[in-house]
Image (tube, rainbow, N blue to C red; front, side):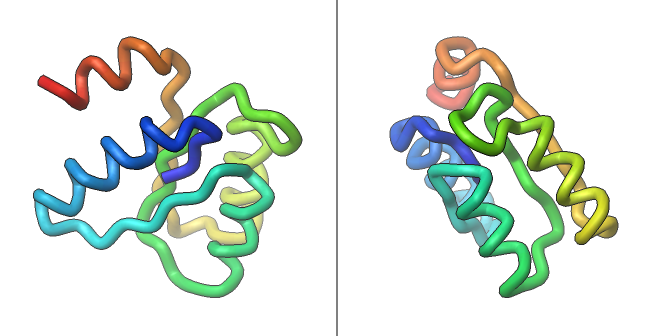
Length: 86
């Protein structure tokens, strides 16, 4: 999970962990790329607008360097957080 909003990361990791998924979270695209280079991940869930490496930049780098990782991008923080709480 990659999002510069720690509350979004916390909510999503909590929800996915409850469903028995292994999750790690990052607060930036740069941190996510470093984490991806250190391990194998089945999927990346990323915010779209982030400072530095945006969600689109992260998607492109993930596709190039980790082509077997699925990628999901979210863009509406308020709507996304509300859906996680349901």
